[in-house]
Length: 119
Image 1 (cartoon, helix red, strand yellow):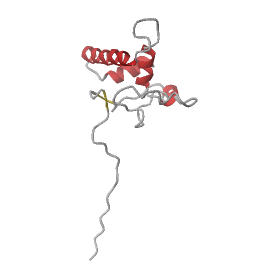
Image 2: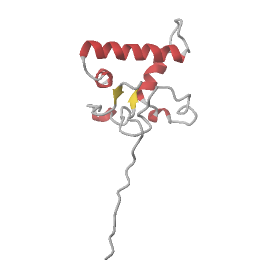
Image 3: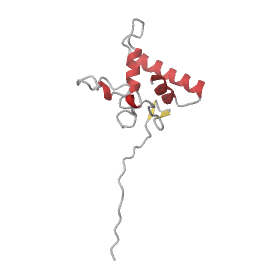
Image 4: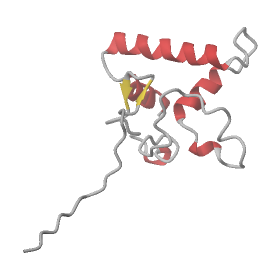
């Protein structure tokens, strides 16, 4: 008698991907259909732990579209004529503290609040 065992291969990660190790990407989606390509967090590349990819999406033309929206938000914090102009670590810290405040005030996932604010 021959037994055949079939195993399904699924892609599993050792750690669940969460922004700053706190907020999950599950259930985060864009309600606006025209912006769904730009604000998508369904792909593995757009689910980052820290919004800092060191210019990975700036090297090729039109590659900024696939940059995670959290990193694009952090990059916009750096723009201006104030003290944190061009300092990304300070901008990441400001973004993290802002998400923490939003979470404390609303009790929701701050990524969902961010996506609704952008739309």
